[in-house]
Amino acid sequence: MKTFLPTLALASLLLLGFAAEAQRTASDNPPMPDFNLAGSDPKAVQIADEVMAAQGGRQNWDATRYLAWNFFGVRNLTWDKYTGNVRVDYVKNNTKIMVNVNDLKGKVFKDGVEVTQPDSLKKYLTEGRNAWINDSYWLVMPFKLKDSGVTLKYLGEDTTQTGGRADVLQLTFQNVGVTPENGYRVYVDKGTRLVSQFAYYKKADNPTPDFVMPWQDYQTYGKIKLSGDRGQRKLTDIKVMDKMPESAFTAF
Image 1 (spheres, rainbow, N blue to C red):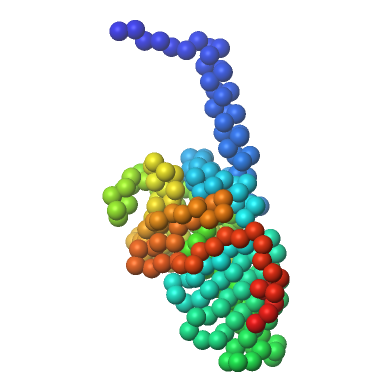
Image 2 (image 1 turned 180 degrees about the vertical axis):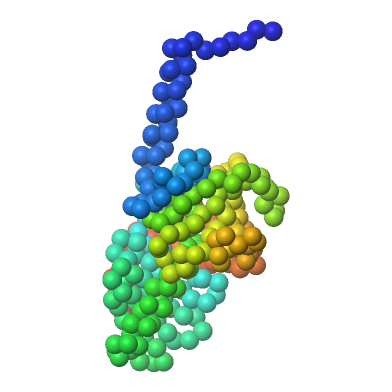
């Protein structure tokens, strides 16, 4: 049996090709400022780029402006990614919070009246921003694997609760969000490269997760893919829109 080895020139070309492909992938999905690239595993970063491509690509994600969804039957959210304006409508009472998550300015309608007392207004605007931080992560986490403050580690292959094979990423945070001590293990399907499951750890170094949930039933919204099926819980009424009236974020 003959064994064929590439010539030095061919090997060099192959290496250049691999390097160009790696550079192309990185340029297609650059990390957000303060993503911990130095502390992250190269393989984990590569998989994060593959997830972004499978979800629709960075260009389409960046071009997506308005998203709306219902979070587990508790509240409806509408988000303008470009301005940071968010509207939170609670389903079981008449509370409406309209807040800009960048500067914490906005207004609140509660118990039939607008909240104007400064301390109360700040309290509810903070509540609305924190609801958006939590609820949006349940919807768009796969697009945020290279976010600011994130460190990614590759943990190897494993099997999900539904029997699928997946690459597992460990995702931890530093100096971001309201619960930076949290951690996740993100399962990326070997075939589709979509997130198929995640495990949540209240403390990132805990030995066992607080819960494990699937990411199922991906659908295309606009030009990106989103999943609303978390097993026993569901994100519903998911929408991606190009235009919305400004009154959606200002009028009760």
